[in-house]
Length: 486
Image (cartoon, rainbow, N blue to C red; front, side):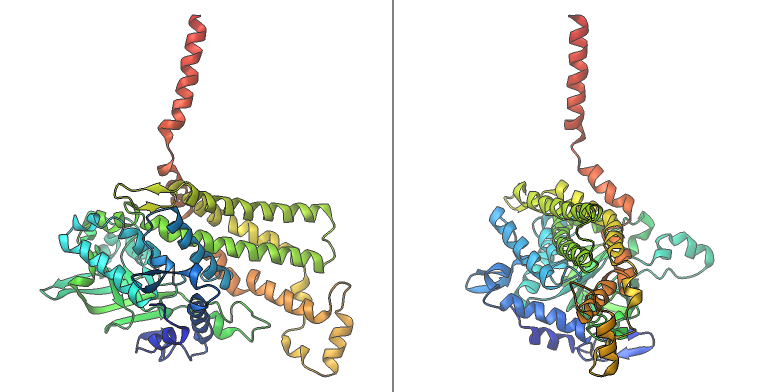
């Protein structure tokens, strides 16, 4: 099925436990800290159903329609269908919803391309992951993930020395019905807006952390589960004119607290296998298929940033200066390079022994690394285009209401090429994107999107065909010896 935006919103009214500070949030679809972003996600569901986009965002199988990001690809055309859906969803949200509804399902789709890996832990776990994929596909569910432990808890010895319990989520008991867990998992971006949470670990665990080695999925409203969210930028947004992006694209980040939560066996995919808990991401196409969505999301955000830079240069009357054109050219080259890598990920796809295909692993990690390491510099260059403009505007959009103050503003803030109202709206929008608290979160978010910088570099190191590269050097060295003997 392809559900509607209203059906999605209704699914969020399920009694989930969410805390904003000490305030219990009863309904994210109506609370001022979350309601606009919930509606933004709902619009994405509605647009997938729109007759203009339904053939690009969805596919038909056995008489039913499903979202393309659930499609298990068997050829290049399938990869392109998936890419079309990622691009549209990112385009509709300007690349600002990093964990949109197509992100985690793409990881799971990659995992079910190699279910035998799960069977190595327990035979029934292969069926569990395939059945779960079928469930979320059939119901068009929004899944987020929490695959990290609290920063301080990653060294259990510190807690032992202090005589304190390690807060990381871990197994406390099991029986014929399932496993009981307690503790904390991070970081649930968009989890307050999700139907389901996929729980695991993408970072390595030590042999003594076997009680933390469990991967499963649960509904967000499962009894005993709480979400503790960070401060809301949406709640602080004055209006759509002053805070265009933060007022409606604040996907939220949350810590999930488990208080003796029972997980049914059919919802468990890895159990007490420290190595496999991480390998399910990297020894299947899971990690690369999920981050292919990330690349498309960043590409749409890059388009937005280059557009802001060009408009700022135009409004400030510097578009004709060669140095400014050079900066714009560098931004445009970066955008084109990323789009080229995305095209290469599909064009140079790889095939598994079972005939399933996935995007090119090396090109994916090259793009992921470039995005994470380039965002700060890109945002800084675009922000420089604004100059002191953001500090020369009135405090808020009330100045635009009819009256003598509006007349004074329009008369004195006018500049050739744009009227004062247009300048106000553009600069406020750009500052919300580049200079606000919301923008600061995005800078940190992009830098660590795929992990710490050294991990991003390691992905490319591990996937480079070094022996092939060294073969060229060996050939040159051999030619030297032949020349010396001749």
